[in-house]
Image (cartoon, helix red, strand yellow):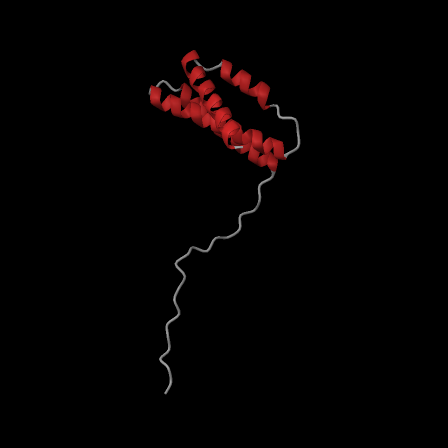
Length: 113
């Protein structure tokens, strides 16, 4: 007796193609575009206070990623001076929000790293 032929099961997982790796320079350019866009949206008069707070958080998070990318580049990070000039341009209330975000990140790093 011959066993019945089983149908081959198709994989339900999506086949992903490997993406070409971006250079550090390209990554830095993309991150600065994100920061500029977030700054523009945060300065928009159409944005509510909650949306402005969220955009400030996006800027904080993106600056953290930018710092890590620049650290992999093995160069001295100009992020410190750029961050200061960036923070000066924000209204005082949003500036406090961003500083509190930095404080929370530092506290989390001390506890977890």
